[in-house]
Amino acid sequence: MPTTRSTSADDESAALVARRARDLRSDRVGLLRASGIVATGYAVGAALQTTYIYSRVVEDWQSVSVWSRLGANFAAVVGLVAVLAVVNAHRATRIWHMAVSLLFAATACAVLRIGAQQLLGVYEDPTREVVEAELFSGLVIGVISGAIGMWGLVARRRLRAQIRGAEREAVLVENAVRALEQEEIRVRREVAEGLHGTLQNKLVLVEARLDQIAAHAEQGPLDPGDLDDLHWIRGELEQARAADVREMSRLLYPDRLELGLVPAVRALLGRLPASIATRLDVTDAVRAYDDPAHPRLTVPERLLAVRVVEEGVTNSLKHGPATSITASVDVQDGVLVVAVENDGALYDEGTAGVASGTARMRQRLTFVGGSVALEPGAGRGARLVARIPLGTGGHKASPVRP
Image (cartoon, rainbow, N blue to C red; front, side, top):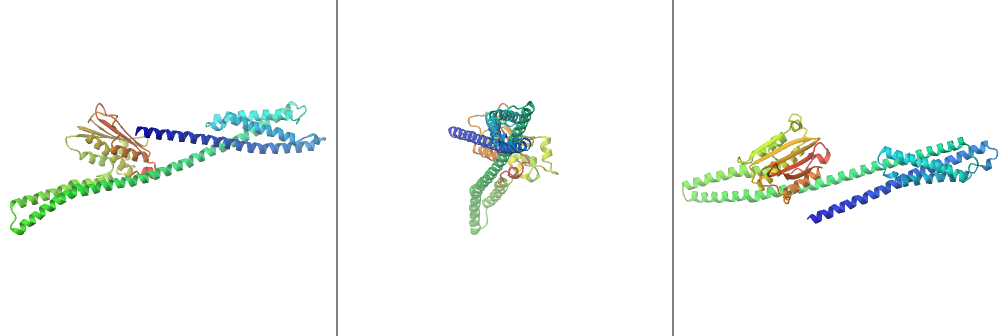
């Protein structure tokens, strides 16, 4: 089992790394493509506009080469895209990081544009004012083009996060539905086993005693032994009604759950033998959430919390013997924290959490975004701690209900 879990964790880690690499490649291509397309548009427009203006004001307008200007501007576009790629601008996640990368690439774009103009003979002997104007215009073009590319990068990331969030929500819904089906099957099985086992056996014995009494009645008056049998039958039926039927009904719906979480947990602890000391610690935050006049805990949230206490009590009785059980309920930052601690057998890390009930509870809490942990108690015993998110809405606010 540990090997299987390790392999699964390695596979998940490898999948995350691969997805991260694909995201980075997609961001890189998107940023460079958007910046390059916008910068190219500016480059073509600026070259054509400048050529036209010079042709109108310069007598020897044939000396103004549109191709040289286009070549210089395209060199600036290539420089902008190359610098954005070299500085890994697509990895930037903070505003200052994006701004620094963008300013560096735009500066390189402007400088490269001036150098290409000199190399291609756009200006024979430019004045200082011309150089400053060309540098400024190149810087502006680079900043605008890169900013549009960065905006597209941020939009792409947000859209990707929304899509994956929706995918995760869909998976959680699917898992919750599957867990609901499994929980329903489990409860049905336990009820069926209870009906087929204990209750049916008692009814069979009761039927046999009634047949015996009926046979005696046919032969003559009932004797004191038959009266004892009738009293025994009445006791068995009373026990079946009070214990077996009620216990099976609790599998479907805990006592006093409709009154609130605290009454339901008190009713659960009240069923324990008198030899086991029980205590329930409830904070004011829980009382505010569980106020009967204005309840903020949903019935599914109460039910899941009660199931956690049931699991903690079951572990205490099964792996004890425990002489005291303490249940505590608190609300911390919108999370319901339920803990059950006992003073039974010493905590064994090797077997902790192996029980099917605890594993099943961990699965249910994972489906609703919660968690459960089994840890050592104070000195002896064990402590089961569960965290249940509150008010998350949708399927997360509706954990599995048998």
